[in-house]
View 1 (cartoon, helix red, strand yellow):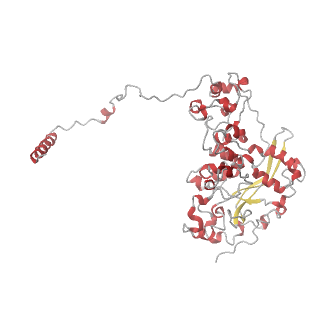
View 2 (cartoon, helix red, strand yellow):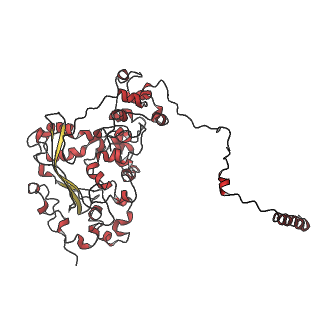
View 3 (cartoon, chains in turn cyan, green):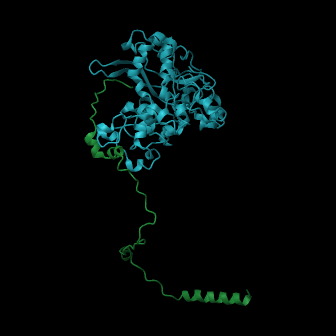
Length: 381
Length: 90
């Protein structure tokens, strides 16, 4: 995605925009400022990103979405804080907040970041001449942020790894699976059939993206896979104890040791990731529960390190071992046929596919104890 | 209707079909000649329902400026973005 010129970012397609619902409103209603031909005067009191205050500017007309969005992970980024708090202590919170403000909060997403402009974290700029898009653009909105792992996997940009079958064959985009309800932090429609909106909107924010039931679940579309109702023997055997990705995913990106700091030269925050590499490793499910009953899932190494935030203070993650560094993953490179689907013994007895202790950094052994596979499933005779 | 009238009607119809068969065959039109026939305008008047032209309020200074590419190029503040010092996958 080529960066937009400054003028290009704010060029409105007036002819098309005025015919839309939002185009019938006075610009000043949302953006403040003053009607004047002089730029400096016109921009006095300008609100460039009104949806930063979505309850004020969007909520009046979108009461079914905006209240729920206040607890959406896209807005709250609480997934980051769930793991930071788990690995840290309350007295380190202020230092971590400073770190978070410099390095993480730019991924905070407003309504406009998906429906009007490219996210500000990638430079912003209207996607379609300020015409509001009900469905965000896959490449200019979704993978603009989720590009390093999900975007590359789904679009087949990792060398030697095919694109996800949902994209390669069906040309599905992100929103074909990730519904409006999920993106807005709303409960699923089946919850809303019993619970009132106020009950659902009053729910505490999700602590992380894999909290609760799977959204989306593969079985939302592939319903016959459950218990092998489609006649596939592997599904009969494994649909309850393996996540779908264990059989239908291929190599995906893992990263090691990200450190963040502020440049002494420019004053800009920056990061440095030590390594990125393709892996495919099956491990024990760190989030095993009723909604995700699988015994085995695929695991991705996240680039956290004991000293990731040492620029902001010493030993900010004293409880580093409280969470695995090999984490529950849902790689977006699904294939019908994979090396794992070839035979039973493609996995059974094949230690190279499993996260065994010898593959774990000795410094992270305690952290990963819950996900390490101690004994690889026996070969099938 | 009586049978006599029906037979009379059918008889006339058959006679007309028979006479039509005696008509000369239409002269074959050469392809090139057919291709040179000038198209004839079917509609000589404008459509009754013209496509609506979107009304852009000329007093809306915001829209006037932000839809004028040249004006935006002239007035946009250049962005001085320092090259990223980050390394590796984000």
